[in-house]
Amino acid sequence: TDQNSWQVEGEKYIREKFPNWENVAPDNYYSNQDAEQAISVGESILSAHPDIDLIICNDSTALPGQCQAAQNKGLNAEKVTITGFASPNSMKQYCNDGILYRWGLWDCGIQGAIGCYLAYYIAAGNDIKVGDKIDIPDIGTVEVMPNSVLDPNADDSDTSSGVVLLPERVVFTKENMNNYDF
Image 1: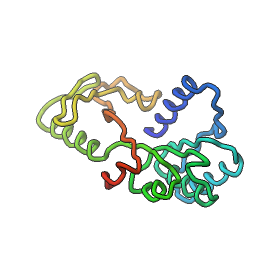
Image 2: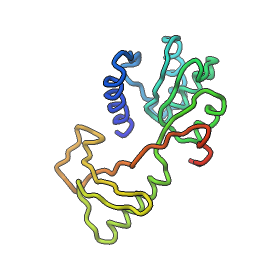
Image 3: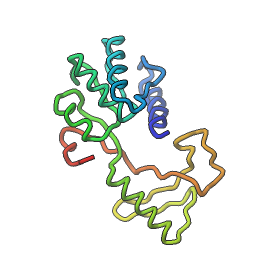
Image 4: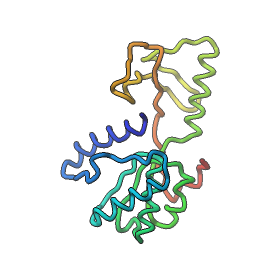
């Protein structure tokens, strides 16, 4: 659901900000968490569209697979821009090799801290419902949002069931990627 929401919001943003861009993969392929599929589909996209300028990978297996596909075809970040979402450790070599410059994901430390704090908060006897704002030390205020922020088809009638979105994504670069170990 989360990676699907990235794609939905990304497409909306691109349509608004870059209306002349063409999506050559309208089916928005995902890797199905299969590294070999990610590489083979990545190579097929590069073969079918040799003049492609930008590839945005929606999931954490597709991004390293697409970078490996580009490397297999002798391409680097000067010839095609590839970005998306993946852990820093899975992408460091591609960044060092000049296949990509920037990519994002959440900071697992912050994600874990939020999860642990919310578990502590509930265990301490606090009730949480959609719409509540909770102050988390050293992180800030988070809001419990309806599940439909991730899946428009979600049933939001039970306000005791919701989701907390991370305050921000981390953008990884050659300069900061070694500050993260996940």
